[in-house]
Image (cartoon, rainbow, N blue to C red):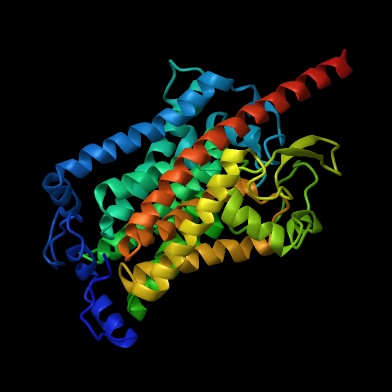
Length: 459
């Protein structure tokens, strides 16, 4: 089913239609979420909408339960020894983030880039005295996994994607390589995805309901509080506002994250202030310039492959040695798409076709509101542009690309190619799940061999 424009509508008139808060998109879909028109005096809009859509609540709870279960099941299957092995997991800082979440004197490196991450997790997890340190982390990452997964579903429902379609694309996000490999370890990236999705949901919700400036500021503050560069999402969201409100949203978010950073520094004196660019005293030698336009990323082609393909379907795993430390780490930076397994090759091909359908639907039929499309597309391109410049192993950042890729692909269900899009999505879910589970098993085999080799050398 198409966008639902009147016959003969031009691109310009379509944009005028879009400005009426996108209600036509939901109306054009037989079983789309019924959302009331925007009312300036509306109170408790989200609660009221949930009470009217009990089926959505039930499916959303099932989606959240699946998200919560993923880290728990992966931990049960593979253990948690790799959480303590420094940079082995694609050069990510798994051990440092685990310490930031649970230890009061955590390492200060990069705490200016994540100016409130410790504040969001460490004090709360300290209250869970009966649980061991690793189980506190597991509980936290499981709730984060549930949160970002159900937000994918909620965003898609809010823009008019049908219930089962939205659930299918939430499942696609959950079985993606990004989710399998990074929702299941201590890292900032899933929380970054969760907080960016909060901003995206607010934008989608505003197409039908009044949203306060304070809500935007709060969403922007938590997004930047996890990772400062993720603030690009709230900046893009603010660009669609009137000038005064845009300045209030951006300025308020910046002030709020500065206050959060000050609060984090008061609670954890070793943490860096958000505006302090210097490495903390006593930190290991670290040159940020080594990650800018690094030849180790392989250039634009391999970065593009990592962002748009490896995020969903894991290619063949490899290892490489870090020149500075001699550590062996996993790498897929120069792994060709579809090389993980035959199922992965099929899933990668289906994903390319599905994403292409989403892009064509986005350009030709303009589903959802103009502001929503603007925020989602430019957020994806902004993250892509950032990592064309910054990074060596790009896959660790994949959770920051994942929500926007899945949303763009899901837009194909709002155009005339819904059935082919759903068929492709099913292929991606089945193929990616089989491939990514196989690859994560191989990842733990590599880790086990590395531990055995290290222990043998030490003995």
